[in-house]
Length: 72
Image 1 (cartoon, rainbow, N blue to C red):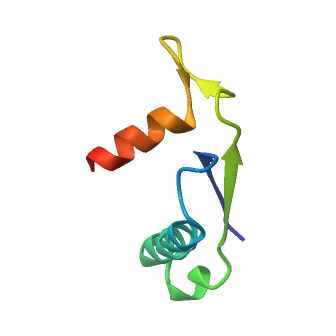
Image 2: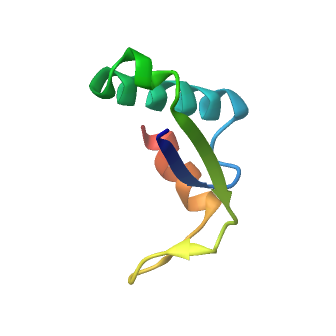
């Protein structure tokens, strides 16, 4: 039973967008693994607190992510 975890910064995506992530990810995986397997896929969206994620160059924040998201 595949389990797929998606991590995003809190407050960047609406509940509807997270639902679309879950459904779309399961369907995409199912397109590769097969329809029978698709029904057994579990997808979780985890929200990480703003400022608790980053890389070597910067700490990522919800405000910055919203700016990037707005640019498309």
